[in-house]
Length: 291
Image 1: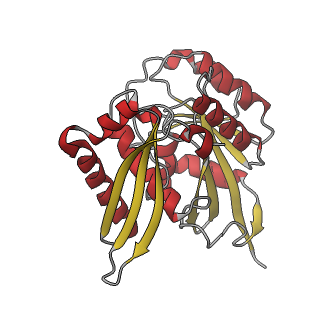
Image 2: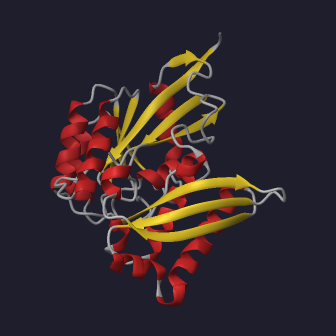
Image 3: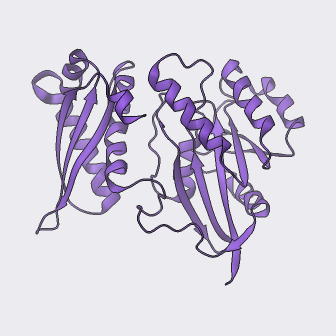
């Protein structure tokens, strides 16, 4: 069987450094949800990038927190560490020089130093004023490969991709393809993906506190005879007061949230969508869904 370049590339960094944006823009469609808030990514997401040179699985890990105090943060940290400890051919260590260096950065750097695979240092957000770049310049002496990119604008990513393909090994073709999952996602089924799109809207549309108390679950997907997708989903939150906030006065907030989610799902599936969305209080969802 013919061989081609195929590799697993792990992304790591503090929360909100742009890892999910990078994966989405490289692959060319949304596979990871994004928002300006940390903890948006709650479990590793694997997306497949293909071109004539070969195939790359990008694994987007949750941001690693310095001090995880609540149950969910601790579990997200555990998920991230499991992903880091799995075998990767290349690791992209993302740094955001628009933010001050802190204890979280020190923790991520400590992990990056212990990784056996080649580590590429990626300074992201080159399209913005990098106020704190001077605090990170010493890192360039620690890592052999250093790139400055804008994941959002997809600028300067070509040379980074060239380096990744140079570093990943030759393998037998189609080693990574798994037809059970939604291409180009490799570790998420339809229900999980649609639930993530709904949860993204909670992150984007609600205030500072609510998103961290909420998640989304898709219970049923059916394609009706007219070709429309019927999706039954729930937003779970930990307290009745948050449930009221998500529903909003006269149900306006949940209608708006559902409308945005429905449009996103329709765009992703290229089908008309009917989204039956409700809100429930479940104070234990962090334990049952992220165990």
